[in-house]
Image (cartoon, rainbow, N blue to C red):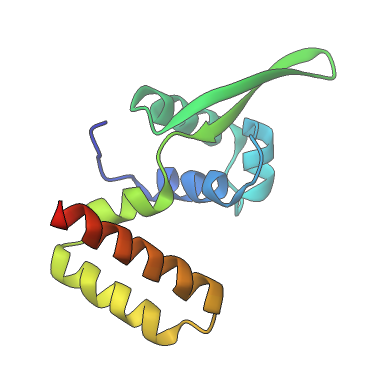
Amino acid sequence: MKISKLTKKEEEIMSILWDSDKPMSANDIMNASNGICLNTVQQTLHKLLKINYIHISNIELNKKSLTRLFRPSIDEADYFSFFINKSAFAKLASNFIKQSDNEETLKELSNLIAKKRAELKG
């Protein structure tokens, strides 16, 4: 997948989808936004579909019409990490670890590091 920088509106809509634990319709997205009109939501969804950042996960009946439900096709962390250079990425990871107070998260990170080290050793 080719990664391209999102506009402010595209990023706002993607953030809404990333934060949702279920597929959302254009109307759901409009209601969750900070005042984006339905027409703008629909146009932006069309563009996001075209560049494969989202996909239609389901179609359901809403009152008397069919409604498409959308899900992100790209993970939020994958999107943002594409635009961060390796030096800044390492600093962010280090800063996150220093500020983390969740033992489970730190254990998960430690396991990921051990797994990556094993892969590198071959």
